[in-house]
Image (cartoon, rainbow, N blue to C red; front, side, top):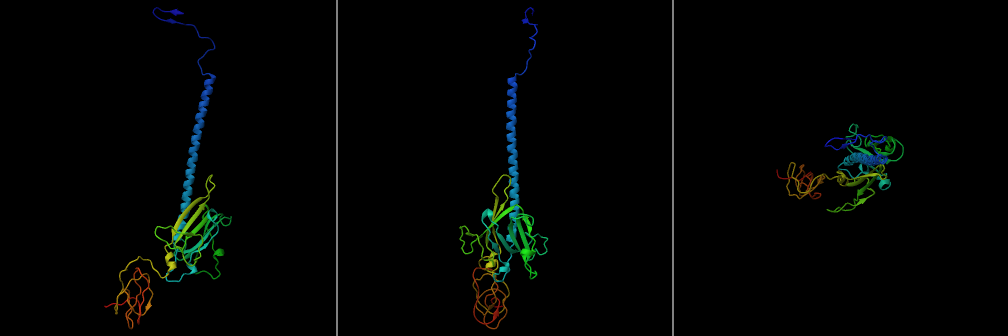
Length: 325
């Protein structure tokens, strides 16, 4: 030991042999345990994040697929066609086959339409009246289970034409497992502020329903057991025409007068829709008149307004009401 003047003692002795500064076994085990806990927690958080990302992605794909299929069907329904000036006819009516309820439903619907929805714009007869039929198939026929569309033109077919045998179905979506349809009850009056009353049958197959409640069920994705449900209420713009083929679209109120007036005189009331050729005279307003033998003209074609059918008495074959030149 060396002792310097004014300094503390400095030991020059060597430390004991076999001794060195290091972690003990307990410290090492504790560090490993902490590291394992951090890795485990990080793995759990990462797993939850990945699972959440997959769930969100699957939900997005489900919604996108369901909306795409529903939009095609809705466009096809709203393209429904019905000819004017004809009595209600089965050839242009909406046809329905009820087969089950809710997620077990395999309903079949068929209607006449115009345009390329459901059939494609490149179809040669897309611009003319053609009938389409939608049905869900759960067998392995054709391209397997899914929603299929059948389409064919309603004129120019052979006498022995059978759509069930001669029309090749086209797969619209292989994700649809069920289709359920309900209709606004045509026998119930609809009051403002009241909900529609729905029925699961459609017997007026020579007409078109005003509203349909369409529900599509798609295959469950991932670990889900219940099918995804997409529902839409669709209105038919041509429905009223199928119930009154002689009516034309228009609002209420007095329409402006139109046409030429030739001979006769009279004052008219209100009228609405398309009015037929009337034999005889009477009072009325507007329209083109063909000069007649005797009497004043009766009501004829006139802009849409509130009211009903015109008419009158007297002689002459007229369209519209005459007036002084």
